[in-house]
Length: 134
Image 1 (cartoon, rainbow, N blue to C red):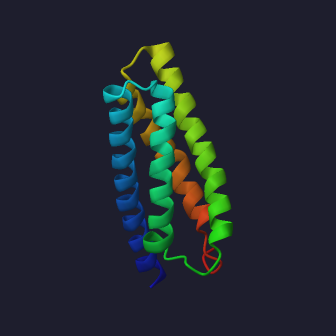
Image 2: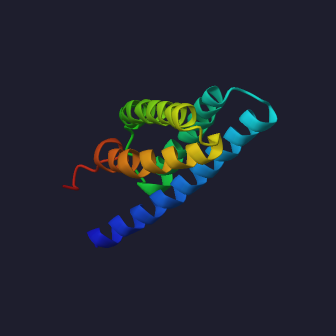
C-alpha cells in the first residue's frame, strides 16, 4: 500500500512540476521577450509565481498534507524555494554571461538541473515529509 501511495505522489509531483514549469516558462518568455524586462528579473518573477502555484497544488493534491500545519510547511517551502530561485537565477546568469547561450535554452538547462537535483529531493525529504514515512 505504501509503495502505491509513493508512486501516486511521484506521478502527481511530476504533473505539478510540469504545470508550474509551464507557467514559469510562459511568464518568463512573456516578461523577457514581449515586455523586454531584464531576463534576470523576469526569471525571478516567473519562478516566484510558479512557486506559489506549486506549493498549493503539492499541499492539496500531491501530498494531501492538509493537517493544519500550513505555516510550518510554508516556512519550509519558502526556505527551499528561496534557495531554488537563487540557484535558478545565478545559474541562468552564469550560463548566459559566460557561455553566451540563449536565455530560454539556458533557463531550460538550469531549471531541469535544479528541479531534478534539488527541488524534488527537498520537497520529499523536508517540506512535505510525512512523520510515518521513514
